[in-house]
Image 1 (cartoon, helix red, strand yellow):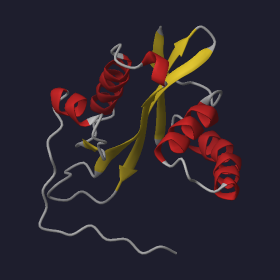
Image 2 (cartoon, rainbow, N blue to C red):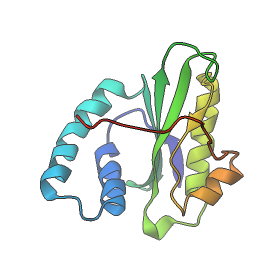
Image 3 (tube, rainbow, N blue to C red):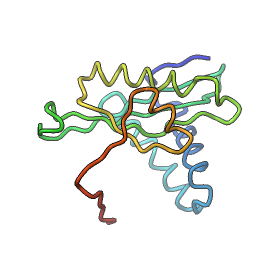
Amino acid sequence: MDIFRAQSTEGLTEIRMEYLLEDFPEMPTELSEHIRAGLPRYYAEHLGRDFFAYIAEEGEKTVGSAFLVVNEMPPNSNSSNGRTGTVLNVYVAHAYRRQGIAKALMELLISDAKALRLDFIELKASADGYPLYKKLGFKDSVSSFRPMKLIL
């Protein structure tokens, strides 16, 4: 099993789509095709700049991933550097689960996040992933602010 930071966009679209279709099995085909079409452009523009992909490969097959998106904002009391990370797409194909792959991917991601001098990294944990993230040192986030969004 090889675990590394992706230097090219090869395989990223497929592993992202595997993750999304497992999380959202009833995603309409039209939406799935739209997302698939937009991913190569995103990866080409962002990979190695403010987007980092960590990949697990068995031979020629991509079997796992973890993505880190670097966000930058004005420094503030919660982020003195103004640089934070968001973890996305932590995924391991079913046949390869419970073998330490997600842990190895996350350890490499965390090491890079430290080297990038991010103030913190955050994620939204699934029930399956929650115990791993706790073991890696993630804490439950509590805020007096209420998350909101406006869909445009």
